[in-house]
Length: 245
Image 1 (tube, helix red, strand yellow):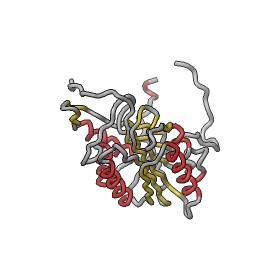
Image 2 (image 1 turned 45 degrees about the vertical axis):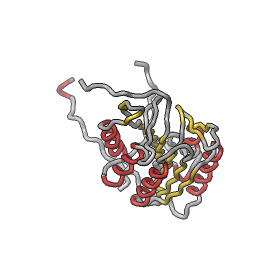
Image 3 (image 1 turned 90 degrees about the vertical axis):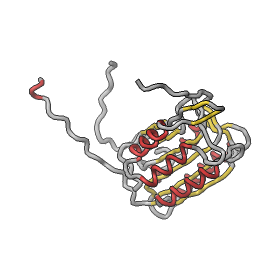
Image 4 (image 1 turned 180 degrees about the horizontal axis):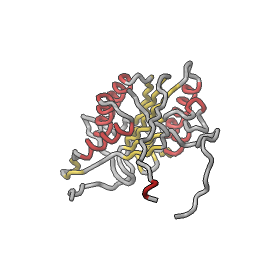
């Protein structure tokens, strides 16, 4: 009955507790990736400003990507105080679902993401985990465009368990199947824009990523004399609002 319909209610905002430690790991292949050092400097500045304990490793092999994530997991598990949030930045050549190590061998992103999920990392269970991936996801180039009922089982509320893959954000520098771009001297537009937005703006992390997307959508990248468009893609299973400052 229309007469019985109530006005829509505002959602009650619930935030992640960020009072504990903040840890970050950056793994970057610099080999044949000119400009990556500029990106690492920008990330270091961002993590320092946002009060993260930051570790940076250069030129990991495919196997070392996995080993460094495992070591980071142990660091989180053994931290002297509760950990509120973890950032992992992965920068390398790649294709969809894969990163290329310094040894030219491939590692699956899925295997890297598994290390810190709610099942495998008790210290981060129910805590926000943010992955930033600066890598190609295919060979497509975007020239830009002119503007112009199955039944589902009902589950009980508030169970004493948590899904394995919640509380995670994956931020890719480009959408599935497309190239990512990086300038030899100035670094990648994605990392440079993201660090600038995260340092100089306040809001939930998803609002900040929307701003990163807006800025990147308003710029063009010149490749082989042709203008290209590129935008990040975010995948989120956050259950609460994540504020970094």
